Amino acid sequence: MRLAGWLMERAARWMPSKRQAWAEAMRTEFNAVATADRLSFAAGCLWVAVRERVHTVQMLVTIGRWGVGLVTAAYAGFHLFGGLWVLSILFGGRDGYHDLLVAHGHLQAAANLHASRPGLAMYLLCMAAGNLLAAVYLVRWRPRLFMLGCALVAAVIVVSLTGPFLSGHLNNRTIYGWQFVPLAMLAGAAALLAWIANRKSRRLAA
Image 1 (cartoon, rainbow, N blue to C red):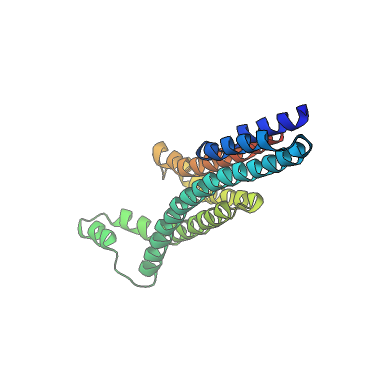
Image 2: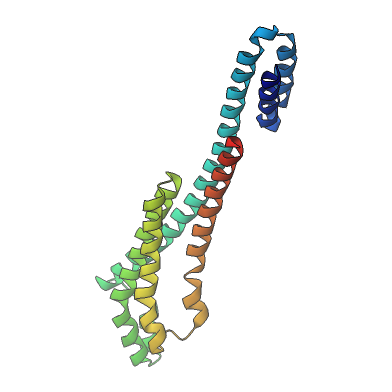
């Protein structure tokens, strides 16, 4: 039966490389099966091959999402630590840099630094929240909520830094532009992992 032979070949092709010995055993058993039973046997082999292929791809994509998610969570932790540190200064903690500016007579710079603390704390805490949301929903793969986390991070960057940048208080374009680099890398990694998963699904369906 040509259909049975075609299904058997597809099953052997779709088996992951580490399972090729199993695929060869299936071929051997297929040739030994009675002609009347070959179609059902080949269909069963095809179903096993699809399950093995999907499992392998899903495992690789899951590992990738966990890796990127953990890095993003660490980035969120960095912002959270910074935000809590700035909050501690606002509530009476010691600020060594501020004291150093005052000691060297840079009173205006010290005043500007002190005035910027509330906005900086808000920026750091919002960045922490956005990155943490993106990390959680990347690992769990909730595309809409993941994009919401990324949009929150982008909005925080734009709202917090565009004004100082345009007014000249943040005159380093590299510092401003760098804030978008980790976000672009995160979105790019998520898009790549989604593309890999979808591409494998389309190839299996072909």
